Length: 397
Ligand SMILES: *Cc1c(COP(=O)(O)O)cnc(C)c1O
Image (tube, rainbow, N blue to C red; front, top):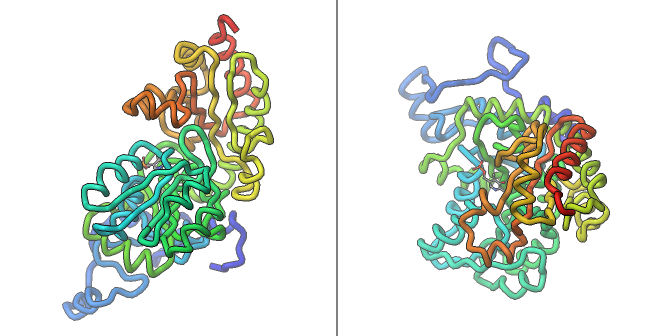
């Protein structure tokens, strides 16, 4: 593979390994083990496996390796480790590198399960975690200390779509030698330039845009070869969070079309956000890629396009939000995102249901907030569907 290939070429050909049959479409090596010609060969491989030699699927597998190499080529990192889910990637990357007594600084606005890992799990093992408003560089500066080992944040936070300045936070973190770990799901690996901007480790839930068709769970940790093979792999291969070969094949095929899909989704999201700007039923329309977004310049610099998710805040609170959701005909009510199908979620009563009211309010998760993951349907049909549902929700506009 050439390092000079453009993204779309890397996505189709990167990491490919062909068997003796020279198949065109990547093979699924649905095997947990590998046969050795001799006892001596088995001994030698356990001592030091070569770059394309495998021992056991929890350690590695040819289909999984194709996915790892293809996404590492896309992200521009030396290596990658594929995991059973996005959360196996988040918890694996953090647990693999941290020990009791370490200090972590994290943005407060996080996916619920990420918050659980940082707040409930790591602290049980003697890791101290400080939370900050990820968009406030002064808070990062105040919280990061000489003993801070890692900082963790979502580059675009779920569900309010606040954007964290990767380069600026990395600069502060690197002054004390802390590792910058970015959960980059909402940015997608296509729009991401996180490593170039200073991130040391990038994490994706492959369940979202990488699969892109809502079929399988998966995740990936990307970083230097030393971090991935020296720190992450020993932890993951012995604790069991590895990706299955079948899921790796789904993700590998997902990568072939991801650039086409997320570009179409982001263009659709911008068209929808534009059409809704002054709608009387809406208190707020949040889309990081729209010129009206408070962080539009940062978004342009950090990722070019604004991603595939919009947040709408309905004037009439939860009742209006529910009327809106129930009136949608094309857009589905569900809680995945990044799918080819457009999906709407009411965070306050689903993904963030368990957060106390004061914490919801602090994070901007209002009763009227609806998260809209824009799919690849025709934007005109999505706009018409959303407008008719807003009409049904409005009542007393
Ligand atoms: C979905 C998601 C995860 C978790 O991924 P799973 O594949 O569901 O385990 C982590 N972070 C963010 C930002 C997500 O959206």
